[in-house]
Length: 173
Image (cartoon, rainbow, N blue to C red; front, side):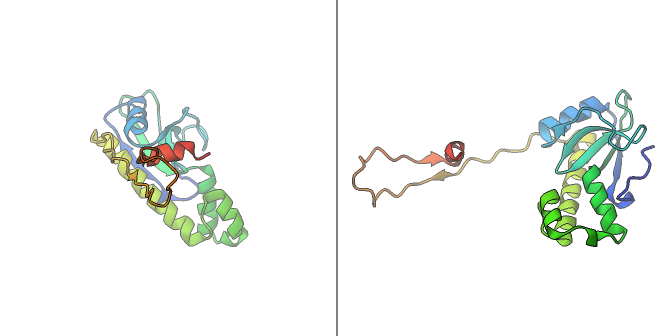
């Protein structure tokens, strides 16, 4: 159905959904932290159309219009090429700086750990979406920062107030 990808079978996980690809895409975007994709086919025709992506990984559907979608989770093209290089013994062609730029990781151990963790998480998310159990993640209350104004005698007492972390970050440009 999907064929092999450059990184090998170790880096692909297939699913059969009882719903169509567009409905699955909506679940993944609304509740799974994924970004919607435009159904492009980065690996070629009949190798899957990307319905969603997250952390450099793709969720591909074999046929967009099928009533029961055949799905695969696999790394994106750049990550596929890096993983192929590593598995084929060409990891020495990539410097630490190149790995840092491409993946945010300083070395191969970090790349493999980060990719493996992201792959496992996305596979769990896709499995939940396929099963119909993927719900909106619970939101945590935002922490508030208390301000110690004892060292600021020249400000009025009501000048400093506790503010949320999100408010601080929105002003931090």
